[in-house]
Image (tube, rainbow, N blue to C red; front, side, top):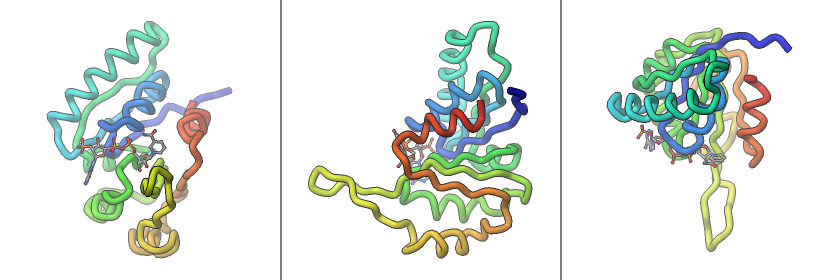
Length: 160
Ligand SMILES: NC(=O)c1ccc[n+]([C@@H]2O[C@H](COP(=O)([O-])OP(=O)(O)OC[C@H]3O[C@@H](n4cnc5c(N)ncnc54)[C@H](OP(=O)(O)O)[C@@H]3O)[C@@H](O)[C@H]2O)c1
Protein backbone atom coordinates (compact mmCIF):
# COMPACT_ATOMS: atom_id res chain seq x y z
CA UNK A 1 0.00 0.00 0.00
CA UNK A 2 1.31 3.46 -0.92
CA UNK A 3 1.66 5.71 2.12
CA UNK A 4 1.31 9.48 1.77
CA UNK A 5 3.77 11.39 3.90
CA UNK A 6 1.92 13.78 6.24
CA UNK A 7 2.60 16.44 8.84
CA UNK A 8 0.41 15.60 11.79
CA UNK A 9 -0.23 18.14 14.55
CA UNK A 10 -1.37 16.65 17.84
CA UNK A 11 -3.13 19.04 20.23
CA UNK A 12 -2.47 18.05 23.82
CA UNK A 13 0.11 15.63 22.40
CA UNK A 14 1.87 15.47 25.77
CA UNK A 15 -0.94 13.32 27.24
CA UNK A 16 -1.41 9.57 27.25
CA UNK A 17 -3.25 9.38 23.96
CA UNK A 18 -1.04 11.90 22.16
CA UNK A 19 2.19 10.22 23.22
CA UNK A 20 1.03 6.80 22.07
CA UNK A 21 -0.11 8.03 18.68
CA UNK A 22 3.06 10.09 18.24
CA UNK A 23 5.38 7.12 18.56
CA UNK A 24 3.28 4.97 16.25
CA UNK A 25 2.88 7.57 13.50
CA UNK A 26 6.48 8.82 13.57
CA UNK A 27 7.44 5.71 11.66
CA UNK A 28 6.15 7.32 8.46
CA UNK A 29 5.05 10.88 9.26
CA UNK A 30 6.38 14.13 10.76
CA UNK A 31 4.70 14.78 14.11
CA UNK A 32 4.23 18.22 15.63
CA UNK A 33 3.55 17.38 19.27
CA UNK A 34 1.49 20.26 20.65
CA UNK A 35 1.14 21.63 24.16
CA UNK A 36 0.22 24.84 25.96
CA UNK A 37 3.84 24.93 27.12
CA UNK A 38 6.75 24.91 24.66
CA UNK A 39 9.11 23.51 27.33
CA UNK A 40 6.78 20.62 28.06
CA UNK A 41 6.25 19.97 24.34
CA UNK A 42 9.97 19.89 23.61
CA UNK A 43 10.77 17.72 26.62
CA UNK A 44 8.14 15.11 25.82
CA UNK A 45 8.83 15.24 22.07
CA UNK A 46 12.50 14.44 22.81
CA UNK A 47 11.52 11.49 25.01
CA UNK A 48 9.06 10.15 22.44
CA UNK A 49 11.57 10.49 19.60
CA UNK A 50 14.09 8.44 21.59
CA UNK A 51 11.47 5.74 22.11
CA UNK A 52 10.46 5.74 18.44
CA UNK A 53 14.05 5.66 17.15
CA UNK A 54 14.93 2.90 19.59
CA UNK A 55 11.98 0.85 18.44
CA UNK A 56 12.01 1.45 14.67
CA UNK A 57 15.80 1.89 14.29
CA UNK A 58 16.77 2.55 10.64
CA UNK A 59 13.18 2.11 9.43
CA UNK A 60 11.99 5.41 10.88
CA UNK A 61 11.04 7.95 8.19
CA UNK A 62 9.30 10.62 10.25
CA UNK A 63 10.26 12.95 13.09
CA UNK A 64 8.85 14.33 16.35
CA UNK A 65 9.08 18.02 17.21
CA UNK A 66 7.55 19.77 20.24
CA UNK A 67 5.60 22.97 19.50
CA UNK A 68 2.82 25.05 21.04
CA UNK A 69 -0.69 24.00 19.98
CA UNK A 70 -1.15 26.97 17.61
CA UNK A 71 1.98 26.02 15.64
CA UNK A 72 0.85 22.40 15.52
CA UNK A 73 -2.37 23.59 13.88
CA UNK A 74 -0.75 26.04 11.47
CA UNK A 75 1.86 23.67 10.07
CA UNK A 76 -0.08 20.41 9.76
CA UNK A 77 -1.99 18.55 7.06
CA UNK A 78 -3.86 16.61 9.72
CA UNK A 79 -4.84 18.01 13.15
CA UNK A 80 -5.54 15.45 15.85
CA UNK A 81 -7.36 16.66 18.96
CA UNK A 82 -6.29 14.67 22.04
CA UNK A 83 -7.52 17.06 24.74
CA UNK A 84 -9.64 16.31 27.81
CA UNK A 85 -13.34 16.84 26.90
CA UNK A 86 -13.75 20.00 28.96
CA UNK A 87 -10.74 21.62 27.23
CA UNK A 88 -11.94 21.05 23.65
CA UNK A 89 -14.29 23.98 23.14
CA UNK A 90 -12.13 26.67 24.80
CA UNK A 91 -8.95 25.43 23.11
CA UNK A 92 -10.46 24.97 19.62
CA UNK A 93 -12.13 28.37 19.85
CA UNK A 94 -8.73 29.88 20.66
CA UNK A 95 -7.07 27.99 17.80
CA UNK A 96 -9.80 28.47 15.22
CA UNK A 97 -7.98 31.32 13.46
CA UNK A 98 -4.97 29.05 12.84
CA UNK A 99 -6.94 26.32 11.05
CA UNK A 100 -7.02 26.21 7.26
CA UNK A 101 -9.65 24.77 4.92
CA UNK A 102 -7.73 21.82 3.49
CA UNK A 103 -6.83 20.30 6.84
CA UNK A 104 -8.25 17.05 8.05
CA UNK A 105 -9.32 17.15 11.70
CA UNK A 106 -9.53 14.03 13.82
CA UNK A 107 -10.59 13.82 17.43
CA UNK A 108 -9.94 11.12 19.97
CA UNK A 109 -12.10 12.90 22.53
CA UNK A 110 -14.46 10.67 24.43
CA UNK A 111 -16.88 12.87 26.26
CA UNK A 112 -17.52 10.60 29.20
CA UNK A 113 -17.45 11.10 32.95
CA UNK A 114 -16.95 8.55 35.67
CA UNK A 115 -19.98 8.29 37.97
CA UNK A 116 -20.21 5.74 40.76
CA UNK A 117 -17.52 3.61 39.15
CA UNK A 118 -19.20 3.61 35.72
CA UNK A 119 -18.62 5.77 32.63
CA UNK A 120 -21.51 7.97 31.48
CA UNK A 121 -21.71 9.95 28.20
CA UNK A 122 -21.59 13.72 28.76
CA UNK A 123 -22.13 15.80 25.55
CA UNK A 124 -19.70 18.69 25.12
CA UNK A 125 -22.24 21.34 24.22
CA UNK A 126 -25.54 19.62 24.17
CA UNK A 127 -25.29 18.15 20.69
CA UNK A 128 -22.77 17.27 18.00
CA UNK A 129 -24.44 19.70 15.58
CA UNK A 130 -24.20 22.55 18.03
CA UNK A 131 -20.56 21.69 18.70
CA UNK A 132 -19.62 21.79 15.02
CA UNK A 133 -21.60 24.96 14.38
CA UNK A 134 -20.03 26.72 17.32
CA UNK A 135 -16.55 25.91 16.15
CA UNK A 136 -17.37 26.64 12.49
CA UNK A 137 -15.64 23.44 11.48
CA UNK A 138 -18.19 22.62 8.82
CA UNK A 139 -15.88 23.99 6.11
CA UNK A 140 -13.22 21.42 6.81
CA UNK A 141 -13.03 18.23 4.83
CA UNK A 142 -13.43 15.72 7.60
CA UNK A 143 -14.36 15.99 11.24
CA UNK A 144 -14.31 12.64 12.88
CA UNK A 145 -15.41 12.01 16.41
CA UNK A 146 -14.43 8.51 17.26
CA UNK A 147 -15.88 7.34 20.48
CA UNK A 148 -14.98 3.68 20.23
CA UNK A 149 -12.58 2.19 22.70
CA UNK A 150 -10.53 0.63 19.89
CA UNK A 151 -9.78 4.12 18.63
CA UNK A 152 -5.95 4.02 18.69
CA UNK A 153 -6.05 0.94 16.50
CA UNK A 154 -8.43 2.61 14.03
CA UNK A 155 -6.35 5.76 13.84
CA UNK A 156 -3.20 3.72 13.27
CA UNK A 157 -4.86 1.97 10.34
CA UNK A 158 -5.91 5.30 8.92
CA UNK A 159 -2.44 6.81 8.87
CA UNK A 160 -0.15 3.83 8.42
N1 LIG B 1 -6.10 7.76 27.36
C1 LIG B 1 -6.85 6.87 26.73
O1 LIG B 1 -6.62 5.64 26.77
C2 LIG B 1 -8.01 7.32 25.89
C3 LIG B 1 -8.71 6.37 25.15
C4 LIG B 1 -9.75 6.79 24.33
C5 LIG B 1 -10.06 8.13 24.27
N2 LIG B 1 -9.41 9.05 25.03
C6 LIG B 1 -9.79 10.46 24.93
O2 LIG B 1 -8.71 11.15 24.31
C7 LIG B 1 -8.58 12.45 24.89
C8 LIG B 1 -7.15 12.59 25.43
O3 LIG B 1 -6.93 11.62 26.46
P1 LIG B 1 -5.63 11.67 27.36
O4 LIG B 1 -5.75 10.59 28.35
O5 LIG B 1 -4.40 11.73 26.48
O6 LIG B 1 -5.82 13.12 28.06
P2 LIG B 1 -4.89 13.84 29.13
O7 LIG B 1 -3.59 13.11 29.24
O8 LIG B 1 -5.70 14.05 30.36
O9 LIG B 1 -4.69 15.29 28.47
C9 LIG B 1 -4.01 15.47 27.25
C10 LIG B 1 -3.30 16.82 27.25
O10 LIG B 1 -4.26 17.86 27.20
C11 LIG B 1 -3.68 19.05 27.70
N3 LIG B 1 -4.63 19.71 28.60
C12 LIG B 1 -5.07 19.30 29.83
N4 LIG B 1 -5.96 20.16 30.32
C13 LIG B 1 -6.08 21.15 29.42
C14 LIG B 1 -6.83 22.36 29.38
N5 LIG B 1 -7.67 22.71 30.36
N6 LIG B 1 -6.72 23.16 28.28
C15 LIG B 1 -5.89 22.81 27.26
N7 LIG B 1 -5.13 21.69 27.25
C16 LIG B 1 -5.24 20.88 28.32
C17 LIG B 1 -2.43 18.64 28.49
O11 LIG B 1 -1.31 19.06 27.71
P3 LIG B 1 -0.40 20.35 28.08
O12 LIG B 1 -0.47 20.54 29.58
O13 LIG B 1 0.96 19.91 27.65
O14 LIG B 1 -0.97 21.47 27.29
C18 LIG B 1 -2.49 17.12 28.51
O15 LIG B 1 -1.22 16.51 28.45
C19 LIG B 1 -9.62 12.55 26.00
O16 LIG B 1 -10.71 13.31 25.52
C20 LIG B 1 -10.02 11.13 26.29
O17 LIG B 1 -11.37 11.05 26.66
C21 LIG B 1 -8.39 8.68 25.83
